[in-house]
Length: 421
Ligand SMILES: CC(C)[C@H](C(=O)O)[C@@H](O)C(=O)O
Ligand code: SF4
Image (tube, rainbow, N blue to C red; front, top):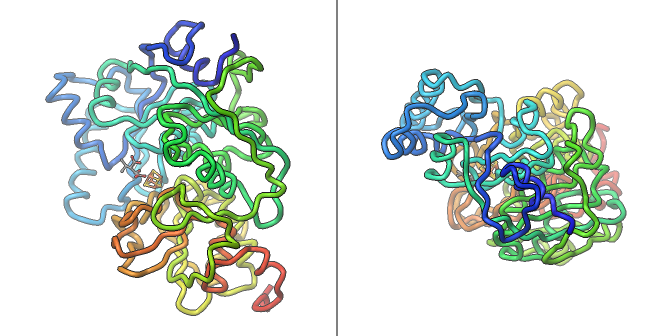
């Protein structure tokens, strides 16, 4: 019988070629990611509870300071200082410090994550490594510490939900709308402890694929793997990783991208998704473009294509936090950043920004935010009284121009305001 991507990758990592969903496997991990938010407790567990002196392989550990970067409090600054000292003491090869960006895109940019790898991270959005066709999974402090000590972890091989796309997007509609459509269709528990396989998006860059891979955890998935076709020479696909026609899936859903309308996730649950046309007139205070889901170069460029020659509506703040320094650099080099700044947006240090409400743009009670991220839970970005709507970068930019949640088409079709084009 054919295997899913999850079965192939966990089979490869366990040295058994024949694994099927439901099997228990002990696997060798290719990379362990840890970030500033959980590193202090992971280090403590590794040394004081497990009694390990050193990490098992200093070349297979990546430490990223991304969640509150730069530090916003003295306590965070001290913790980050301790993490840096620990990295030096352990001789760990890969430290990505303040400003380099969010761990998920950064480790792919650095070439550390490649198709077919098994990567675990101290972060639920570690499913994002599936953008490069790796099995990425988030784990808690103890599991990460155990993997650091031994280089191994264990899984029950997950079943797989297959999401197929056919066709291509209409103008103003993009991969975020597809991802939100999947959350709407599968619901928040629709893939609990399963792997989601995404097919039919070969025309997307790996950064665009990360939108789907990171949203996979929002339907409960253990991993979210985008089919590796079309990844390009930087991401060679091992010959054993392939789409097997007779693989067995727990569910298959299909989306016709050519008829997809912009999707919006309304407060306070990610799977509370409606067509933009059904949102009504929602006035917005803050437009926030960033995160591992939609803070990449492509996302800034998509927003810039709508903001070009236009200005933010009065009383709207637009905060852009690039997902990585590489995305920021590209946006700075080709005029994307200049367009965003000319429109009135401001730019933050690459990293997680206000995504978890710790710094760089937290929301006040009653504020309404259109957010390109992946979670709109009550209190996620600051005050529990704020309302967060998840949408694409295109919808975010169109909203920034009009001041209320807007279909990108309505701004693109109008010459109003586009006087400096
Ligand atoms: C802080 C971190 C552990 C958390 C996660 O696990 O995902 C964060 O990245 C998030 O997006 O909520
Ligand atoms: S950008 Fe947001 S969702 Fe992504 S890892 Fe950071 S806090 Fe988590």
